[in-house]
Length: 194
Image (cartoon, rainbow, N blue to C red; front, side, top):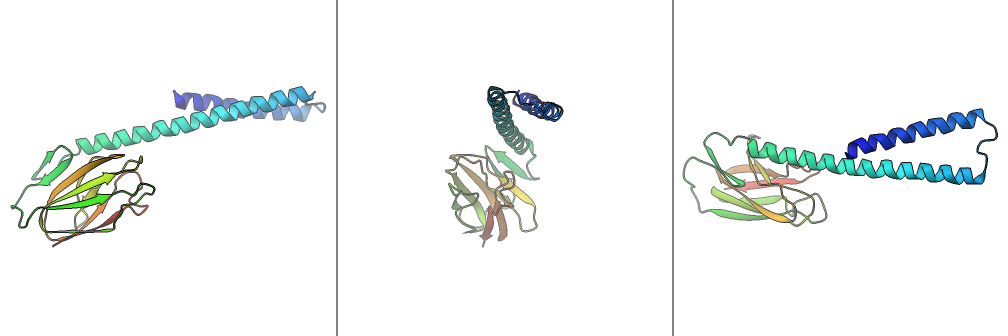
């Protein structure tokens, strides 16, 4: 509905501006009075305000739709071969962890598109990243293997917490936020597993 109203008001604004221009160019005594000028200014201000309002509402609806599609795609994405999915975490099956389970803390900055650290380290075996997002902007935490393959992602959250648990071998992994272009904005870091 917001998209339709955006187009209706936008088209009305363009047509009104073209009509007013044509009328003004053909009639030397245009506008006829100060009251007409005030009325035209009020009319165009209302059209601009309505067009802007529905443009913002339409953009907000589009963002929500994209976020819902990303969440649905993440939920329906098949787990890697030999992996089991439990809730919001994916645990890769295979050899038993060679070390003690490691729990790492990671948080999103409340006022920036950034994690609170660029470096994490843990021991080989079960590694859990407890992710805290105090921001109203949605974020998640995803892991990419040393060869660039995606291992798993947490739930996408805002003003909440989530966890990602994986059975990891020694190596350098990349953790990142997969929401929109947050990774390209620098929301990533290195997880070193020894």
